[in-house]
Length: 310
Image (cartoon, rainbow, N blue to C red):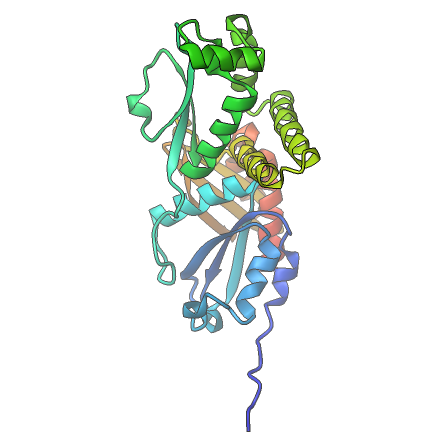
């Protein structure tokens, strides 16, 4: 006679998890970290551990040990991926299999100088000439290169060069682009990499117009390819602050419901995360030291920490 295995229920506290992206952490009854992960939707991802765990069977023995769920809501999946990577590089919990993640960090170089301006992807910032603009880091070399290939079509910086071969000159004529367009294109690209909303919308509009033309022409494979570029551009332009070259060391604090959330960054990488009981009076000093740009993030996640611990 076959018996149905009872699927355990997720802890009631998981109802407080947001449906957006973020990082989660499981602790055991002694407060030890069991596992750190990232999610597109925190609520559905965390609750899935109390389901059938298809494809994640190695974690089945971990789930009964989980006594506490913690989470940080992030501003984008890109930010969540960076935060997970930083935390795992700092300390690898027993049930995680590898430090970091599958995505490779890269930078985008915008060289607007001379006869042959260019836009390219590099792995090491140290190899970039100090006289050119370098943006990043970004996670995911494939996605970033996909976005750069797309930008090369809709904002063709290379076609503004003054030393073009015959094919390049013909391509520039077809695109209606010349040296006089360089400043405009550089301005849009710079704004995009700096996450200026107007520049991001302009680049997205150019790409979605290409996709819609392909659909109208019944070129569905081309439309699917451009849609992948649209998603890659969204990844490139996504807001993230947890990994910023040159940001140095800093501390971010938030307080809610008697809980102090403490996040620490070293060398611009946010890689330490703790929550502890704390009175409002004792929290006042670390809260005052939190950088202004981080206060909303800290407040939201302090409320989340209190709700999950309540």
